[in-house]
Image 1 (cartoon, rainbow, N blue to C red):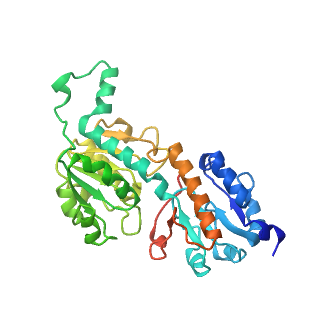
Image 2 (cartoon, rainbow, N blue to C red):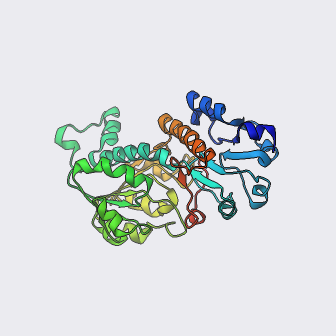
Image 3 (cartoon, rainbow, N blue to C red):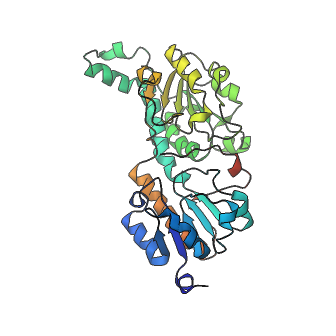
Length: 341
């Protein structure tokens, strides 16, 4: 055992695609470096292999196949600060070796939830649409601009997925006193009912909702969950708010429904980012476009750094992490996440 290991546990930091300062506020970085032997590998990621034999933790999600993990006998944690569990890590090997695999998804939940509520209000009241009209000298005063407006108060709302995003969004919706139907096949009905929602099938949710919030992660089961047939179940003039993962929805089918005038939608995540300059989505009036910015605000990023520091302190004391999201052996290999750039 090296003297450095005996003094402070070694932590390798590869925060890409983010610069390190975006994730770690000055005080969090100071606390991390005071307690651990920290190596910032932002500009020299290839040094990871040299550090692995003495590494206590890796902050980031570099490629970690089994053979690489076998060169890290002291590794106790992999802390992903990007937001997704990718298939570039041998999760079975981590679990076999007692390595905590942690994600930062919960840090984004509040920011995404507030943004989702804002998108729903915009769809219901035409806020950005009328802003564009006003700037073009084509504004509609008083009732003339409200022919298609409706209230969220008392509305029929649907949540597809009740994970981090759903749990953050629910308390923001409750003051509107809506009826909330929820579909999440990974949760028992009693869990959804205890939260004050009505658990339903996907078909019942779609056919009975004025606004549908798509909050599900993408897995082998949820990829293309909302295809052409499912979108056709939505009532005329229903609204779709997509803030989780693009592959959950058949994008061509959704854009066809919006283009036809039957549905409204607000989208923050896209199949290809950046989207092509000539993409049809840019020309659709009943579509609110957002360039994947719902969660990535400074407070959320700095929360990630704080979570990393807190959980590393706990793990170094032989305690379980409590701030970040632990990868579940039963679920982590089912995700179909792609890197966010």
